[in-house]
Length: 83
Image (cartoon, rainbow, N blue to C red; front, side, top):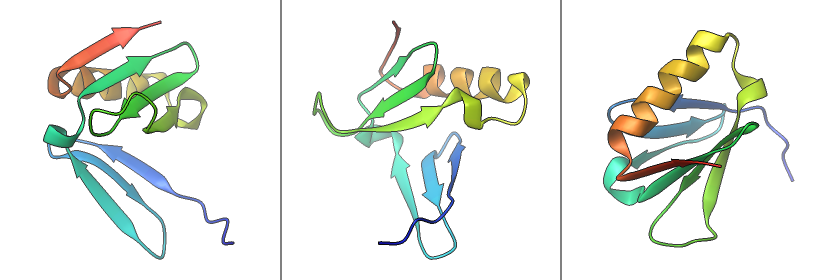
């Protein structure tokens, strides 16, 4: 199995996950909720309570990037909560 580094881009279009071999854009209508914890963001897909993509906060270069990501997630996900 390949263990490739990847990047995550959160924008008004959706959540883009990519590495050197592939990329995928999950558009906001497919994201019913986001949950923020102290360690990161769980971006849930479909209406599943178990299928999510984890965005760890320690993967951000600077604190301001975390704040910008939070705002885009908050603006676009129908449900945004903190635990």
